[in-house]
Image 1: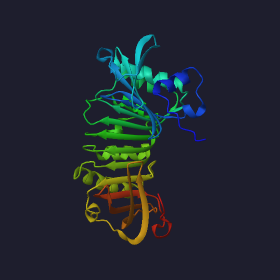
Image 2: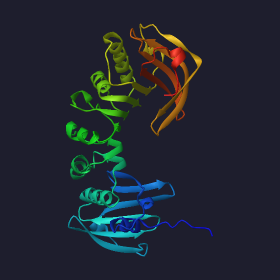
Image 3: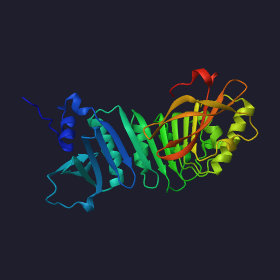
Image 4: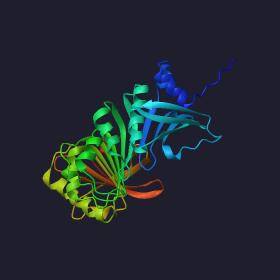
Length: 330
């Protein structure tokens, strides 16, 4: 007899977990929280099994034929309306929707006994301080990916924001100004991705080299980034500094040779191929390139490869004593 997959509604999943009758398999969800212009929580196992919890203002609640059923629940002594919609969506209606994100996040984390969040995306322009405080002080699990969008955000308290970012080993910034990492104290992360920082200054690059194991710069404005990276390369060559950073990937449109003024470089044979991947976003294989070797054996490699159909120059910093024999998959 063929068994059909019974896809429970978001509310059934939530109710089963709250009532302690959910099977372990039912609770094995990855959780992604969006704190921005649209506040929502997405739980998923794979694309065909996912549930979406939306947060709306109470005044926008209108009962229509599309709604299957509505429920009233108390969360933190607040009356919340749950409305089941088609296509695995559940809308929740709150008197204060931005406060609702904090309370619903805590509610779901508790219901599913979640020890980690797959991703938290924060848009600084719309974020509510209460949600960030919940992330910092109340959620005691780990965050696998933290994405911060300050593209249109106003000036913010750096220490306050970076306190949130300490929760994650992977941090992505989408921004339109210098993040000034040199002013952030006691901040470290394993992996940081920065998109469109304008400008990204030398002092920030030096600070990042002590704060993160891997740094990726994508579409940070050229020619500004060209001058800053060139200055950073000279700093790296002349000081022989030890850094926490093992990899720096700068994906920019910089001519290879112009990046190395007054420096001796070697060509890497085109047969030498290496795999390059920036998290889940960009992937490529590049071959050959140019290298500059420091007196202690540390190496800088520069090459050009198409990523997402756009040619980008990749600048790598790493420690490979013998690039002819030891290059492999990164």
